[in-house]
Image 1: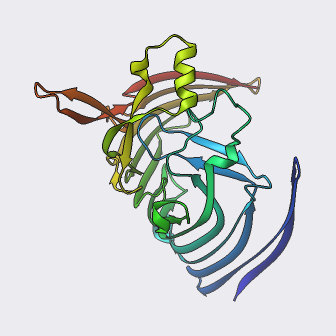
Image 2 (image 1 turned 180 degrees about the vertical axis):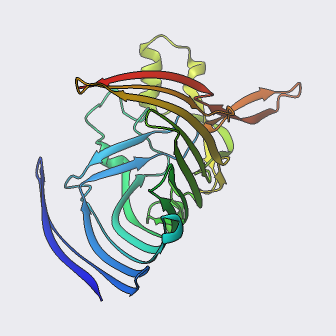
Length: 333
């Protein structure tokens, strides 16, 4: 009728003065409704001692991996899923549909107005700890995944689509209201195809599409007088008193905008041959981003001042990795 698996493990983490044991039970069950149809369900509890800290503001994006400490404890989450799988025997393919829900406590995010750069008091370098720039809250995610894969014959590969919703909530951010997570992508579509021409040659193609991630832009800025310690710093390096002033920036909602959609096509051809001496030669010809899509890496503003003294800003996109052809050779023995 089916099968069931029940498991349990406990993870132990120790770093500096922080020690923690996390029990992580898990269970799964599969029921065969038909020789070609099966129903699957799973539940698991997970502890994570390394946090992912993502920025969603202007400029170069940064993803930092932060260890759990006494001030920033580990993240604890649980996930449940329910899916249906169908074997399409005539074409040697499998179609699966799965829905999931995940919730976690101890998620981290930058406090508003902080970052790891440019906020250290240079006259009192021990005054701030990196934990002071981070706040903890909760996150939850729900979605659905559809996967069609074929592993037999000269043409193999898979087509996958994911619909997901991921939100976060922190008492010290966005007035305590929830917002879309920096890594939230509403839609993700991937196609991978592999065609074997003969025993030595094969062709491959990969098409990727995903919704852009969220980011925040300034709504306005106004002049302010720098803090005394920054004035002392400017004096110490011989700067004029005109540098004692700066602009304070007001930002809008943390998830007010999304980047453009991300998509690209990769193509490749592979040749391999195995010799009598048990050596395997492989030569690969690949083209990354075939149609040279300018996917956004980050956005940045440029400011201009008109004849009346009014300053305007224009948002620009910065892109990396245009079309890139590559050739590689490997020898395996």
